[in-house]
Image (cartoon, rainbow over all chains, first blue to last red; front, side, top):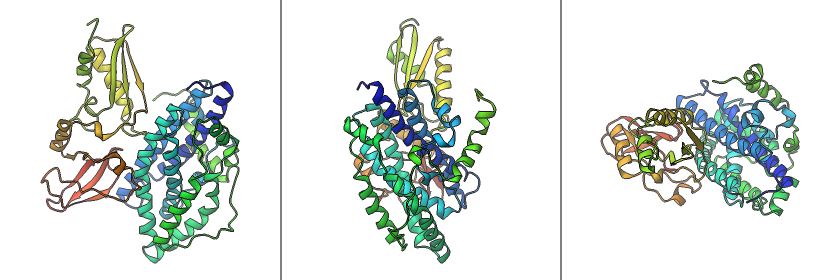
Length: 257
Length: 164
């Protein structure tokens, strides 16, 4: 599929959003390395982190290429400021406790599952190829996060309390998972990606079903939702996280392992 | 060798073992997708098992080294995401090698079953005693592609190459 210059710009923005979501989430998960409550979860979280970072690498590599080939995935990951990152605010939230990390993961995994399921049918083969691969990996992430939602929610008094509190704290960040703007609309109009509007309904259905099975209360629909991250507006947490993530590359530009 | 055949090149690459699972090589693991000789250089196409597989760089270096040992100085390795790596590419003999090594091989499960919203769990037989009295301890093991299981019969933990 040949792409004109204008479409390239729009496509690069879209791919960067997908890449940034996974890069930031992958980095957050990597912060658990050596600190998880049990060994199996230390291994699980770091494995998932690797998947997310690998997926981010694939999306950002393609974004850089489509945009003109001046930037590699490393340039995009390590040398952009927070205001140029376009990940949803949900994934930059701190790990806090294990319940909070699992809630964040679950809410993201459900969106990722339904989004990638659609994107693997993209008319742009390279995007379809990456999406198909990521989709298979996400099925294992979702199985893991969903099981922890059930185990913690329908668990002890403490695990239930912590998870309920986590779901309420993260709920305001969920609307952004389905906020599509001119970028997605343009790509849909061009026939490059299928329409994405149906994802929200599927997300709601599965999330509500799991929250109910986990004996958790669904937060009120009147909760104020955050917005703006797709155009670079972030919570106070991203800058701090990037400082740690980027310090090595920025201190020694061009360093090779 | 000025005009190697594809077969000859594949057989050189078959000497490169999977760094995490030395019992199998990168060709039978489905990591090497294609190889050809053109323009005086060897062109190898590889695909990662999982997106973030950290062994890919080592595998790439080992591929270049193996070709160099065979006399091919000019080598290019390209990584592709598509078609997505799948355990369906592993032959029965490869699966047998994994089992002998102590890793429960992936089972022949239809793709649509694997992709079902995760609700099912197939029983994996123990590679040591063959019992089906096994349980999953974690879907995530020592490498991206392996899950951790436990056999209640012979009481040994074992790893399983996940179906994907």
